[in-house]
Length: 133
Image 1 (spheres, rainbow, N blue to C red):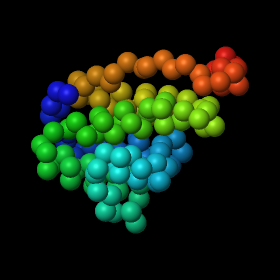
Image 2 (cartoon, one colour):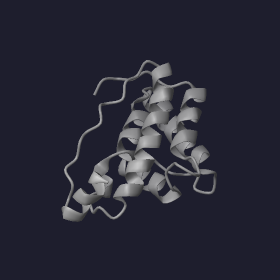
Image 3 (cartoon, rainbow, N blue to C red):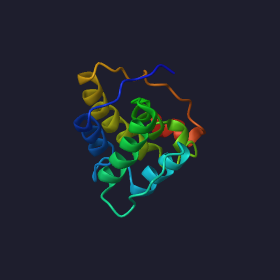
Image 4 (tube, one colour):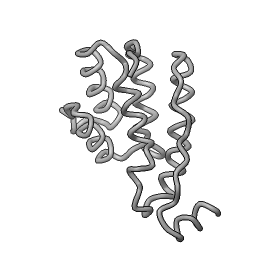
């Protein structure tokens, strides 16, 4: 993976506020799961979601002197594989669309491109029907 320059605190904060938005963002346990999956310590669990995410990503960004961890977090947050069982598929599609749009707006200002959407095959017939609606 190419090295991405560190994000400024204001850009990192803006991205974290989008990702942890109360209405359309990730839930607290989703943030904790993704951080744990990335082996990033989640030390501020009593704080607001965006502050907790900001602190975790800022610490790892400062330690490694790259901005790659934010991009990795965004990619994992939007990964359809997280919803492979199909139970939350419709909710995930809506959330992913909103997160992707807002994340792209922030990252465009930094001239960083998000990877293209990866089409995914439905798991079963009911999911295929849901996707066709």
